[in-house]
Image 1 (spheres, each protein chain N blue to C red):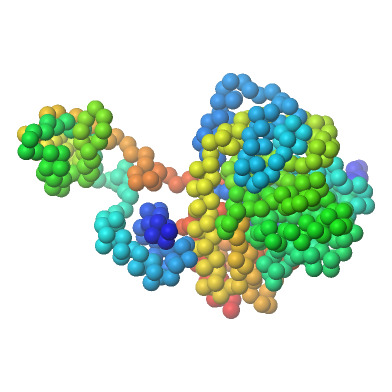
Image 2 (image 1 turned 180 degrees about the vertical axis):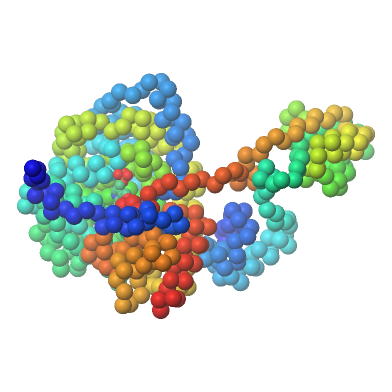
Length: 385
Length: 161
Ligand SMILES: Cc1ncc(COP(=O)(O)O)c(C=O)c1O
């Protein structure tokens, strides 16, 4: 007997990263620049808070929306850091990673047949998330010519005026692109004009290396039509603790909470204690990590230029996005460099339109490994010239 | 703040090449060289040494932290005593500290006997020194900001979203 799977599941192919992972796992000499998570450990203060909460037996469910103290701390933090003003009672929900927040938003906002425009290349979970929610994806490719920023031209060309939602992710995974206030203003105007709701994934906001992060939700008329995602995975090096949050209008967060209370009930309690401490006392840890990423970023960019590979000047997150030499595809390049040199990188194609011909190279890895990995890439490029 | 950035990189690893530091700081190699030279000339950078995990070597290396109490008189200040002590090659670090004792001295030798002898025969007899307390280092976990022992295993997945 075969059990018939749902059409939604069948239409979503397995992740493009999966195949590479299997190749990489077969050998033990691989230096991986394929990771989307920090190489730092969670700051000790946050770990201690998690441990203390366990010792005290604080292991029951919390409020569906997350612990009140944590929502208060998030409200203060996003206000101080990003000028985002949200009421902890009604406009913040704590979730199991930003991932869950993204999924909740799609399910709360997308009706079958509705269109979600996604600025691509982008984090790989948005598209499946839309499909699982019954929606349709409209890809809005960005390009190196525009520094991988989203433009109104790209929105118009893709037909995003007729879409219902627009997903943004800046600083961007995989390109490392950021959007400044000037870049966001026309996008905001477009969203207002065409009645688009914006989902803005700002999980890399702290990892902005040139100037300060600006959220689209702070622009005039945008707070009412934007849901912002953030979390503790990246800046606070807490990926495995699974904690994120969403900020948005009362009715949207309320709707997301309605789904969340039946599916997740509440985000992991131990992680909520860690997160509270992270917001209260780990600023210096974050700054130290950001400084290190920045040094590595500059190192990696400079090495790619020396190797002769065109590379986009990433200004955020912990990825850079070099172009593969003409005549090979990114997938071929990634496969062969893994095979011949034991260096793992992700082909840009898996992140959707606009990623073709590029590689995502993560520098969330120690400088010694980066140095060795880039030397191997250099050898590979020379040998295959 | 290029000075600071260069210094940070060197403190992370003094063997980073000029080229690597230039890459990390967005400076030219010649600028990096100039900054390093200035820092050396100004005596900000006083030297370069490896951070050694002696526990990984066969030959014994004995190290001790020695607390020293001194009595000053009209002619002798802390500086004079320090100058005298710092001259001994066995002394690898010497600091005037606040608290229960005056100087914190690090001593190295090939054996416990050698270190003990040095303290009792060379240091204790210095007239201004009123007391010495020797603590032998048994295991070192961190030196110069670098954690010793086995390098952290990276058990992250080789690919993640
Ligand atoms: C843009 C983006 N959003 C969300 C996530 C997932 O974050 P979390 O661990 O909070 O679920 C990632 C992880 O790679 C990401 O790159």
